[in-house]
Amino acid sequence: MSQQNPVFIPGPTNVPDRLRRVMDMQTLDHRAPDFADTFQPVLAGVKRILKASSAQVMLFPASGTGGWEAAITNTLSPGDKVLAARYGMFSHRWIDLCQHHGLDVQVIDVEWGEGAPVEQYAEALQADSNHEIKAVLACHNETATGVVSDIAGLRNALDDTGHPALLFIDGVSSIASMDFRFDEWGVDIAITGSQKGFMLYTGMAIVAVSEKALQAMESARLPRCFLDFRDMLNANAQGSFPYTPPLQLIFGLSESIKMLEEEGLENVFARHHRLAEGVRQAAQAWGLPLCAKRPELYSDSVTAIHVPDGFDATALINHAYAAYGVSYGVGLGEVAGKVFRIGHLGSLTDVMALTGISTIEMAMHELGYPIQLGAGTAAAQAYYSKTRGELRAMAA
Ligand SMILES: *Cc1c(COP(=O)(O)O)cnc(C)c1O
Image (cartoon, rainbow, N blue to C red; front, side, top):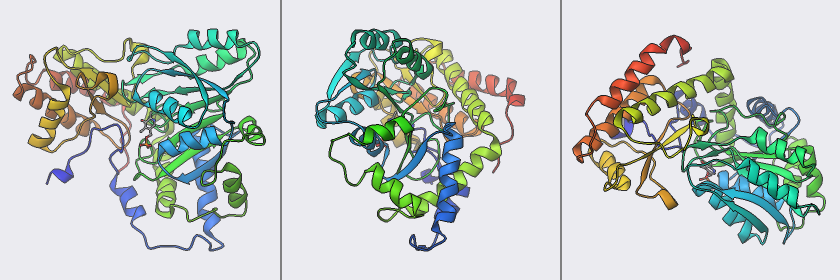
């Protein structure tokens, strides 16, 4: 029965029935002449969600990590310098991937719980008067710490210093849950995966690419084949794919975009903010600090919560899983054992959020945490009840 429970991991996220039904389909021929009728409007829909009217969108059979790899291999050459900050496990992994590809990564290390340090990026760009830095990388929403970063600020840092570097943004755990403005922020490549805000099964990297990034492709010499933008764009222009596309996911994405737009994109963002705020109210009532250092860094898609000294966060989520069949995010890397994470993105209602809050609260109580049973749930109930009018009824 526990398979009926929602997950509170920050991806893969809960797949709503409506999307499961759409993805449960007979095989179709992706070489049929009408395949493009399905797939072209999906690309246009992705652009609307990312506010990326200027971009080319590509869909690769991969996960978000494949999107990272596509971004760098299509635009950069061995030894190229890139600038990136490390403030959690996902920003770390992208840096690691760049290093595996022989890029020269200038890393800005900041304390986990902080966001992308705009001023330090600006200083590094200012100091790079020969424009050796070819790309600036940042994770919009660091899923390991529950921290959102100021991408508009990074754009300003590039503009203020007149630096021509490309701006690559990991939006894997923000896109379709939190506001993302590809055009306005002057993003050159944005990356997400099917299994987070789009509420689909894992298996598709969604990549949006600017004209400037496509130009960089002309001289980029990192080896690429499966993730080659040119092969994908050429095939897409003919209404096809360079290889077998993840058809079920493409149909799922078409329906997911419909769901997001029926609810209204801004309403989707407001719902995530409200769900997140309920979780934060619960953490406050438990007396447990967030990993994110300041309110402007609070993520609306995932919250990382510190456990008290002497307690092991990994043991806590293992207990919640064993006792109640409910999954939460484990602490990763530097914060392993110190934080647990409540993922609250994608297909989620007040009712679901309350089960997540109350279940982890029971688990903490059972393990002797110094919290009062019910305090966090009551705080979230009070908040959801008070702000209920702000919520537009979620379709299905
Ligand atoms: C989930 C996630 C990824 C990608 O992970 P995959 O498992 O490869 O899909 C990358 N960045 C962030 C911020 C994520 O949350």
